[in-house]
Image (tube, rainbow, N blue to C red):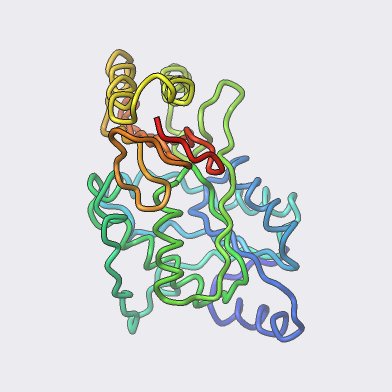
Length: 287
C-alpha cells in the first residue's frame, strides 16, 4: 500500500492508471476508521481496479469548533488497518493541499436538501461537505465513490452535487454497519462510555419500532410516537423526521416507497445520528 500526502504525488500515481483503462474507486473518510469504513473499502475493491482511501478531517464541515478539536485522529492506526485490507493507496493531505490559496468554493444552491434536518441544525455543514468532496473528485478523478448510508442526508447532498456539476462519478451508497446490539458504527462512538453506548441503543429500538408500525400510523403521527420513546430515554432529542427518500420532504399523511426515518440525538455531549428505511423502495404504499 502506498501513502501520498500531496496532490502532485497522488496524481503522478493515478494518471498512468487511468490512461491504462483501470477503474479508480475512492472512499472519502475523516479517519478514526471502523468496520463501517472497511465495508466501504470491500465494496470499492469489488467494483474497482484501484482503491484510494482519503483521510482528511475537513474543518469546513464543522459548525462547532469544539467538535472539530475533539474529533478522533488515529492516522497511524488507520493506515495499518487499511494495509491489512488491501487498499492500494491512502491519500492523507494537509489542509493546504485540499484548500490551496487559489481555491474557490463551489457555488451551489442545495435547496431543501441543505435546509432540513442536518442542514437546519448544523448551518454551513453541507457547504463544507460539498467543498471537500468536489475537491477530492477533482484531485482523484474517480470512476466511483463509496459512502455509508448512515449519513443518509449527506449522500443525498453528494448525489445532488455530482449531478449539478455533471461530474462523471458513480455514487455508491453502502448499507449501515451496526454492532451486534444495533448501534450504528460511527467514529464518534469512540467518545462514548460503555454506559452511554448502552443508552444509545434506544436509537435502533426506536427505528425498529417505526419500521414495524408503518401500517398502524401515518408518517407524522408515527414520528411523534418515536419522539416520545426518545424523550423517555437518557438521550436528548434534536430531531426526528420521516421523509421522502429523494426530496427529504417530511411526510405527513401518506406513505411513499422508500420513506426514511432520520434521528439526531445527544448522548451526553456526543451527537449521534441514525436512520432506517421504513418502506421498501419497490413497494408503492399508500395508507
